Length: 116
Image (cartoon, rainbow, N blue to C red; front, side, top):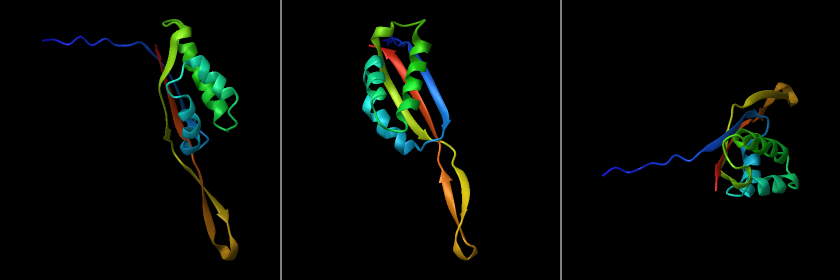
């Protein structure tokens, strides 16, 4: 017996090397996972976190990618995740000739939209 696999159309947008830690981004993306695209933008607009404008711009980009192939009113955020990117290492001079390391963390954020 053969199983029919129906591929669902998706629209993807990805932001790489965002200068914010993945830990901070995950707080924001947990708010919008599974929501409709319009509702997600409304939530992000009034979220007072540093990652919110970045994620909002990314969701808008994914909607723009979907516009030609899917119905804009039915779009849902099916996947959204933030992974750790490369860490830039800097040095901060300290007392007695020692030094501390400053880790400037980056993240890779990905949004996948599907039709509901």
